[in-house]
Length: 290
Length: 333
Image 1 (cartoon, rainbow over the protein chains, first blue to last red):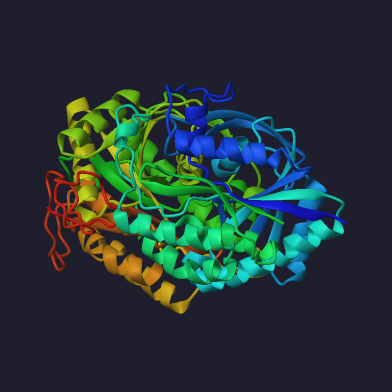
Image 2 (tube, each protein chain N blue to C red):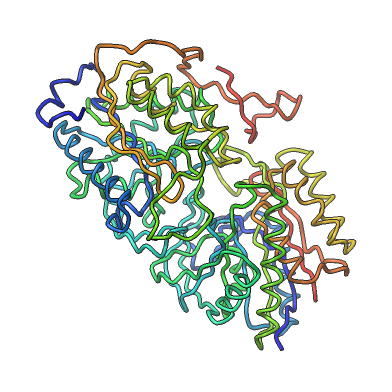
């Protein structure tokens, strides 16, 4: 029987890949955002202790309005250029998809009453949120992935509606994994507070310019991280609508809600590998073990 | 009444470098499979009318504002000479792939950015191989300019910009055309109401607008546009955004602020609604606005007309020394 071995809050600012200077990324940096990059180093070390087959990533940057979509092609190889930061992220990716597991989640989610669709167009360009979170978690790309789109229900309706949908998706994900023989790590690909600067430093990696956009955002981020460290995922999810409203957080995409539901609302303390800001947004790399 | 091809140039009354303006939708259905629904077929045919008019006008540049291209760090202008890719829409991937090769006016793009910066805006060109040009721009250019007869210029829609900033961006576009000594047609790519039906496409059923409320607001806009009241439409943007648009992060419905500004901020137009149909719940309209010397009346002009952008008021902090932008913006001009 398959199982979820870990879940990770895995933020996806392209700046982190830019700071790492992998060969796949065309632009090169001097340095930058080390506290988050080192947090990912600690995550990678931690995950290296685990045996797992697949990364399942839920991304805010593959946004669909009509249902939830799943990558349904076995391999993707192309160039991802960030639409906002093309100067920082032009990444040549080559990845493999666990299509049977994606199809099973898709089917189980439909059984839960969700509108779902497999994405089978081979020319499709995988979104940069998925790529950044996967690269920072597993730069060797030696694991297959399942890519899940984020539905815009929080915009069309409300965070409460989205949360309910993410409960369905979480249950469907858990069931599909258990029905498989796979060991899986879940990635909720998003930041915490998401108010950001609207200008960029002349040198993007000039860390003297990097700080939280507003102290109020920082207070909210710390509140959420305290709940994670306390293992109080129920309160964490209950707070999300307010947190999202107050900080314009990327939790509006539903990744964290989906992951917590799939993991059965963990009560053990999460490991916070690190926290840092990127153009003013709050980001934390946080790991939950099953 | 439709205008015959021969009359188009004759009836344009303007000294502006922008000879005519068009509103078009940008959904891929209209390019990839117009035959699958009668509404899409009619919209596709309306694109052909616009294409014919553009060819008759013979502008130097097709000047595009696309509500499908979001930016957050100021305003981006596409400056790759011949961007080439195969686009797949993230929502409508099952409809197919769109291979494209476009032709941009790089000199104009640079001048546009220069003029925008001189007016206080944050702006930069974007010229990267593989940059994801938005679905709306690709669809519109493939339908309006399939042989790349005309060079194009595409500017992004900044998520946070409000009216003053968008008006100034429009003025920068006109100024850049004058500096370059070029003529243009302005093309705004946007739906009216933008709420999708939350269901799969049912090819056996006729299209419908998502709700009666959306339909009524679309009709109000179309009534004004058919009367040539472009500035009045622009000044209804805030209310239209509240009533008929789904979006919380995009702070305003801004295409018509830019559109009216580049067209001269007046109601002096002959308006033609070539086609208006639903596309999966959204309001898709193809509209032409021809500058005339007759006004339909200046009824709703009550907002200021900024020349220079002076930045955002920091509404979240009492510390005025902060120079970083806030997400919640307001106009200072």
